[in-house]
Length: 413
Image (cartoon, rainbow, N blue to C red; front, side, top):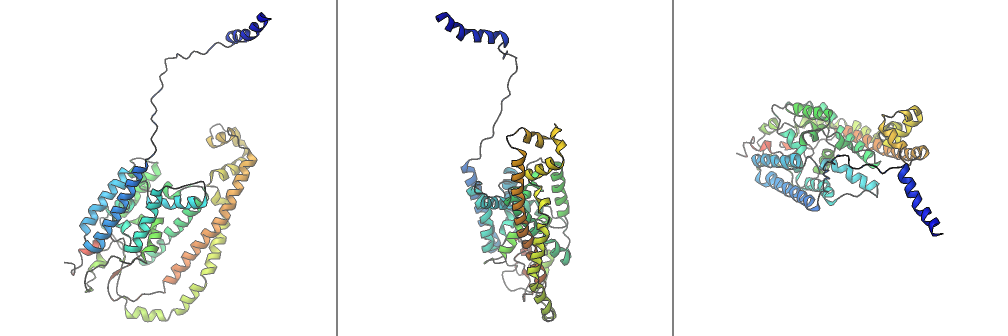
């Protein structure tokens, strides 16, 4: 009996050794050293927030009290080196919009205190002192500001028409972030390739193109693209202590207006313009009345394209691909398809998830389109609103508080 038990316990190992010889591990191959990047410490994040707060505070003092373009310029160079090249353009206030939106729409996504600070601090400072963040803290704005060579005046109708795009871009960025699809602001950041000394080819080309254009059209990304700038434009309109061109009485020499490369200085309101505007009250009432219609049309138009917009989401794209082209399952070179086939997910669960995403896009597209319609309506109405001005004043929404106009003002001297 004892021999029988021994044979039952030993013989499988013997047979197994004969049938399946042990593998040879001594092949001479040496594993490379793999360096795993350490997670960013909270201390470094707090340092970034402290630097941001310090630069915003110093810039506000330089703009409002010191009134020094020279020091603003030097501070902007420091911000470019630190937030741009040293931190590789991240964390970025411009892209933080998406993190904040996703955290509000997805309870499983949490943002750090640093991201919250990078989003809120520039907005809070703009309420107090105007767009001081754009003046010398934002690396995206600074890198454009430093390449201005010979700025040209952009026609008013072109400037105002293109000025609507940042709001459209902001609305789309919120839509894609809220649905968990993509962070399009970061994906199409034109300067991230320059800050990181390497990126996809089209981003390098885009960044160089913006800088070349920026030599003649000052700050093209800030003025006609930046979605965070759209928020700052709104909050800065209510700034309590905004930059003033002259510390004393304006002598209407017009030098400040000629010196501003951003066309952000408004001239005194002529009496003729006020009298002409009184005769256009009917158009003002008409455009104000059709704002709800524009919102409805915008929401309906964008929601009608929600399926197309939703295909940017990987689940929706893959579901449509597998249903419309089932032969791709045999394509071994398609990594998306092969990854899905190797997972535990079924086609039914993928389709169900895709339908959920599309439903979210339908609702989000309605809200996004309505917002775009609202912006278009305010754009039309604003053409018939004139605030009386007796001096040359910076437009609080468009002024970047760069301080260029200081040295051109003879009263300043």
